Image (cartoon, rainbow, N blue to C red; front, side, top):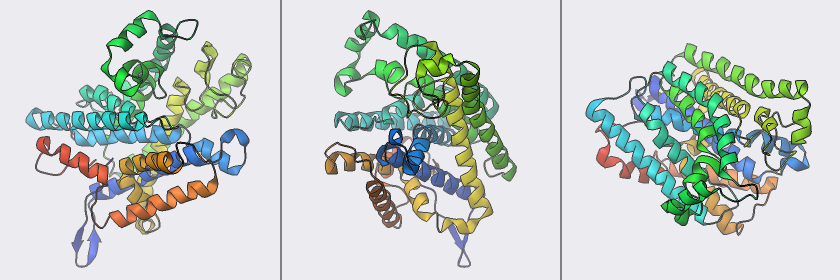
Length: 401
C-alpha cells in the first residue's frame, strides 16, 4: 500500500515507463478499494433496500478482497516482480515483508483496541503476508495453482476447524481455550491467533487464497496489453464461476435456500446475519461467508477491477486527470483506511452513521487530503513510516509496491 514512483520529464512532457504506468493503474485499483470500504461501512444498510444500499452491498466483502489481492501483488513486487530475488537480495526483501507484516499487525491491534464498530482487517493482512512469504519464489503458474487449491480446500478446512473450535454451548473447546490462554496476542488484542486463523471476520484459510492470487498476478508482465486483456477475461470467468455456480446450486438444491433463509445468498448477505453450521452454507457466495464460491467470486471481481484499471490508463492516458483523486487515495491507501477508522471513532463516537451525506463527506475529505499531500510526498504518512522502518533492510534501488 505505497505510492507510485515519480515520472521523468522530457522536453516538458511526461514520459512514463511501462512499469510506472502499471503502478498508477494499481493505485487506481487501490483507490477504488478504499472507496468501496467507505461505502460498505457508511452507505445505507443493504437490508433496507434502495439504490444506495445496492451499491453498498456490491462493495461488501469485495472491496476487502480487492485489497487482499492487491496485497499479494505488492508482495510479488517486493520480492522480485516477474523474477523472484535470491541470495542477499532475497533475504533483504523477505525481511522487509516481515517488517511490513509486523507493522500491519501492530497497527491493526491498536485500531482494534479502540473498539471501533468496524472489523479491522489489517492484522489478518499482516498474517497472510507472513504465511505467503515462503511461497514468494514460486512462478506465476505455480502460485495460481496454489491459490486455486487453497480456494478449494481452505473454506472446507475452515468449516471443520470452526466446528472443532466451539462447544455445543458456544464456548471455546478445551484445546482452543488452552491455545488462547498461551497466546500473548489474546491478552493484548482481545482476540489472538484463534481469532486470526479460525473464528475472526477474515480467517486465514479463506483469505490467504486471495493474497496468493495477487502474487500470481504480480509475477506476470502487467505492462503487456495482452496480459491485461487476458486477466480481464479470467476475472470475469471466475466471478461467473463463483457467483453463478452458487446461484445454480441454489436452484438445483432448494434445501440451501431453506437453510439460509436468503434466496439472494448467492451474492448478498442482506437476508441473514451470519452463516450457520449447516454444510449447505458451503455453497453460498455471499460476502463474509468464507466459502469456496465466495472466495472464487471475490477473486474474480478483484482481478477484473485491477485489469480494468490497468487497461483504462494504458488506453486512455487522458483518464488520469479525472481519476486523479482516486489515484491519490490509492497511493496512500493504508493512511486513508486508518484515517477513516479514526474519524469514525472520534467524530461519531464509535457509532456508524449510514447516510449518503456522511459517505460523501468521508470521500470528499479523503480525496482533498490525498491531493494536497501528494505534492509534498509520493507516500502517505503511514506509508512513509513503513518506508523508514524497512530502510535498513532495503536495497539501494527503490522497490515499488
